[in-house]
Length: 364
Image (cartoon, rainbow, N blue to C red; front, side, top):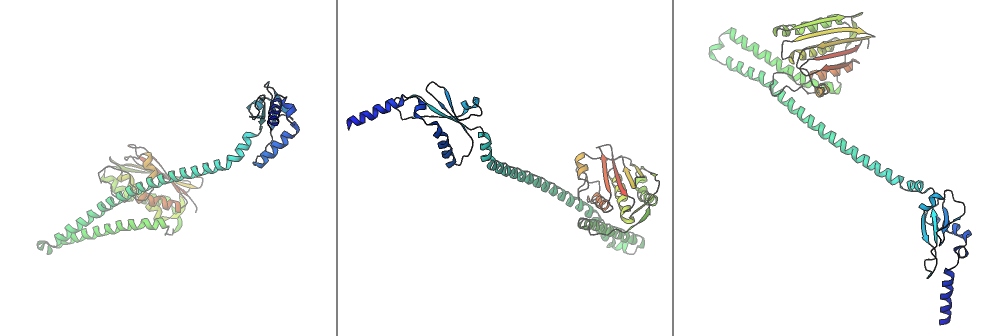
């Protein structure tokens, strides 16, 4: 038994000293490795070579790129030899990168999609938070404005009622009629303010119907000018009307068109800290009517211009509540212009006034 074991050891020692090509059947290596890779789910072309003990590369079969073989994977041949020569097998996959990409593209794409969804949700959440914050500020401003608007007529009515309760004035028709007139006017003012608030819901639901008819814009503009002329003159100001028409007729709702112009002119007066100078211009071009209202008021920042058509938004004027309103006028203007298939543009700079330009089609 000992002799047989010694003989086996000697045979293994001698076997390890043989030339590698005498020990390896090169015709069987490639099919053997291919089958083994196939069992692992890898069906990719590969180049194969043997590195002998003199560090020479011996190709097995055709090799596409011998220069890149050095970057392949090496494995020692016959590692159990006691005194064997340093021989290795070298395998290189030409399409390794493509194979790796094919294996990882789905997880990577899924990860990117998931990250994109997370980023989108985060941005959306931030936008919603900012929007809610702005809505909260607008709501608080609206409540403050409404309180101021309602407080004045209520206080006036209360004072008038107290005056009428004075026994000394009961029999004086002049004073009694005066205070009754004050109560009537303030009650009408309160009703108007309530109607403005209720109008906001009507505009949002589009719950209105336009009465379209052919109108002479000259008449509409003259009426709008006459509507604000007294207010402008009382402040020592001036309003100029300039028209340039080839045909002043257009199809529109007379009531709403007049209110659109009145709203714009009222704002031009309200937001003027100096003597109001207002220019009202109108012209026609390519089947459209253009109307511009230019003032010398306080003007607006770019941020304010983006928000002025939002419901209840008002241009900030500090802590001084000297400009009356609920912030519904321009929201009404935009809604009605859209109903007329029209549009409005604003050019404004702080301290340099504003210009509102309306564009309306002549025929609906």
